[in-house]
View 1 (spheres, one colour):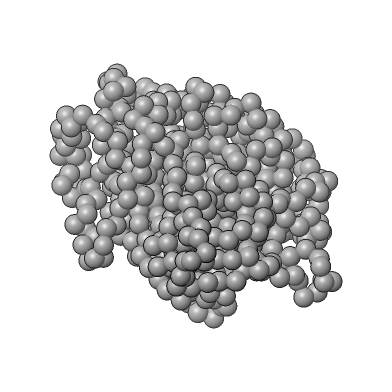
View 2 (cartoon, helix red, strand yellow; view 1 turned 135 degrees about the vertical axis):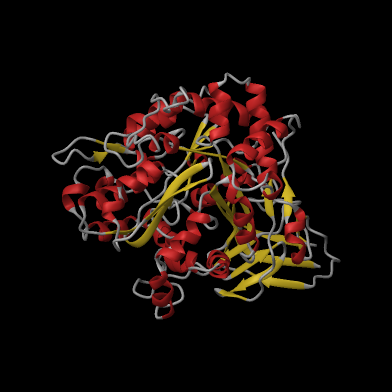
Length: 558
């Protein structure tokens, strides 16, 4: 199958293309070189006036697993409300099926999404849910850092090599792509009635600090060659003054690669009459000093959502703010805890306005878009369907000013946002959501349009707003909400915002080498403490035989 895309304006930062008009060629699902003047094409698409990018990559979105299912069960009314709403109305993960997730992402031009918090005991459920999401390639990050076995190994002064083997065994057993660390040690401390847990606090009964857990796991991930850096949810999420915690975490990274998740929730100072202020500039000052650190923003947008997290301390501290007034807290085997708390972000709220502004400050003040990534921590800050609105806020300063006029002015006065005129370019958006995202994850076969890459290609129509004069800026919200065309592995799957095919994606995994002797240690722990057998724990190819095709794709280790 040979396809030609002609006349489009290409935005591919990996190839230093920033709107140049180029022809693209697809052969057998891959990007190809120009086959020459005598080539016979099976299809030709005229993209004159259109914007062309690689398929977008979401590095942090909660799309599968126990928390997602619990949110659906907790909020059944959102399923009913959904039926009466427009199909594209953004709300919460609670009302979306796996099919909706794939379709909605594809309509926006996304082709790869990472579930950033897979509890190992829940791995099979996560992978079965992701396998049911059409179109998208997926991946998941395995959670360690609160599991009893790791803490026991550290308490007994196990060697770093033994820790490495345990981490590598876990990644293999769960078919994960990388490692997630959530408030290291905090879930275990919560069981001892600890309600705030800092980087140097000690986990009761184990005698190890959060810092030690974090550094031990970071060292393990680097030594076993996992391409994606440890994906870290820091201590003290949402607490005024917690910018000092995230800066200390950057310092604790030992100069090794580390990714900090949803950092808007850590960019909080304690100044002002209410003791709550923006510390976005202070966070970015530290970020600039640490080239080994990458971050995603976790932008807040206004409206109803549901917060889900393995950080049980943070979730429990907010249960009184649940809207509607119901919540769930949970603990799973000996591996971790968490909670589900519905929440509505309100424009009149001082705190919510400040959160909204801080996220935008981080985007607009950042000097390194190749190290800062585009997320809402779906669904915690906002559902992923709100991405087009966020892109318009970042790319249209006039629209941003209009939105600010409706918000809490006392909160805005504590930020730099009203004076920021910067507008992100299409190239910067392509960097955050394509080229840099693929590089961060170790996915060298995507995020760009060079020959040999998988043919994940999105075409956008930059039509102008109906209420603006001809020749004015595009309506970025409308443009990014509905792709004109989306190709997945060279197959046309979306046309004019409508899904026309639903192929099955692959899960991206790593398989680091480990000493098989660690399996005996794990089995002894299972036999003593778990309610299931070790043989029931892992994720196997046979679990997906009904797909009729391979489910997993191993990516190369560093």
